[in-house]
Length: 418
Image (cartoon, rainbow, N blue to C red):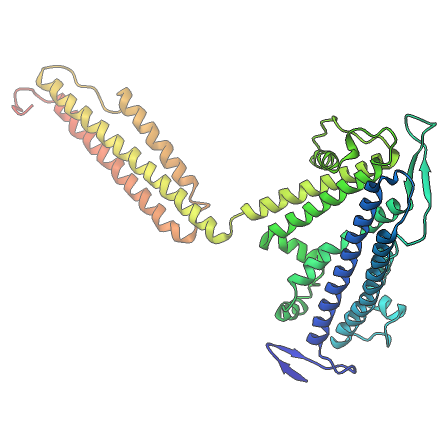
């Protein structure tokens, strides 16, 4: 047993600790993704070079394109090697955690570690590639011109299938996010949480939404190029012969707008458009959830907002009470003047202006009372103080009223001040 950093690591029969195997796993996966993506980029360059070299619908390799295809094959070979090294390190990580697995790197060990299907998927996406000296053409009947089928070369088909490698990007982001996070793995084991790609992608919505937008952007670019591959060989292609038009149609389809100015004309193009539409539903929901997660306030910020709301209610209640007092005093002075002039003063409670301001005060008091249930414990005293002040204000209004009524009913001559 070795004490390495903050994490307790245990050596297995290979002589490496769990942290060392985890670092090797991340390194192998990064090399695997880079090799696969580099092969995809070279294959796209080969396909575009063949298309724009006035070849037309026939595939005619030259020395440059053949050399590039060999480079694609070499990159796929290195990617395959790194795949085996990655899953070997992944199995050894589980062995270092005390999981009993079949010895070696084989199908049984992958099945016991629950990584068999992912291994088969990684092996499958490395098979499609434009093989040198291998050429064939697949023709599909046209939807509008039965005598002119749409023909796809082998390079178009292989490059389209190679875009399955784009599914490695979310896993690559997950591996990079968890790189060097040894304590995160320890806490995950203590909490019985699996640190997989789905967990990291959900965390990215809150921690780093920009990475999610970058992944969505890569998905849009991939879908646009697939539309181009499906529509460009069409003999009567019009709008979708360029990448910018395909990108426009992809964005409009994914956002469920669908202007209809540019549409797919081939069977494969419509099939890709259906996939793009399904991707758009998922993409829009992810963006909305990400924005909501980013805009949602944490409990500390929510407490500040609650305090601001309660303060504004308190201010409104204080203003309403002061307005009642001002109107009552003004009416009291008016009644005094009426008594001096020998007239009949008006009672405060039946005066229209007094009734209006009292109604406003009652509504403000009701709003303040309704917020007591949602207030924090620290705000309870403040609300009670507001209620006490309101009670004192009501008492002052009653005293003013009772002081006015005897003056109105008393003798005018006995009180020279009035």
